[in-house]
Length: 158
Image (cartoon, rainbow, N blue to C red; front, side, top):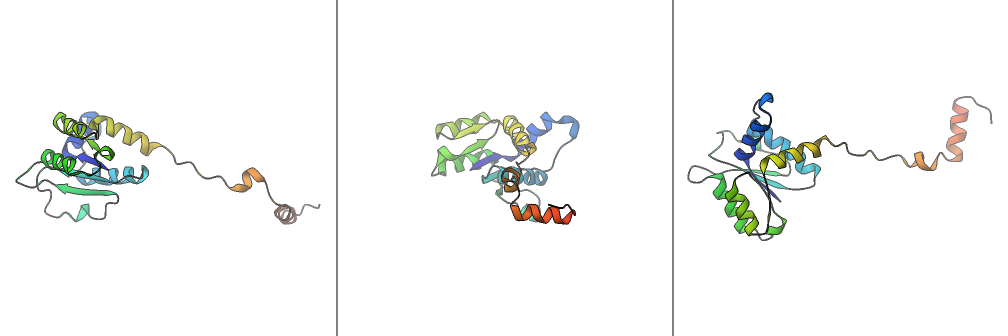
């Protein structure tokens, strides 16, 4: 399970890619969903505040649950509570450049990753081409009957 400090990651992306302009929280979530699917992982992202009134854009995002901390809390506190409540903290990865969250993760033996490093790894992973499975015939060759069919199709006498 990967838990992500949403606005912290967005801020890191802007710093890393000042020339490309900012991305929205919704765009970020769809990118993260693609990444989670690629690495066969599930994740949660927590944003400060209440988020947009209409949260329907965040519906149906595969492999990623989206949370907003609300008015009475902040993302850091919500994430810390998630780390403390985890029944398998060694299987957690916490993504934030916030020292407080990384320390909290390490205290529970979870993995802590700075936002910039995570984003860089995410890009590398998404740029990789999935290997295309070769057809069996490529290694074993055609069968006798397939060879006869092709010779007949092209009008080549045997």
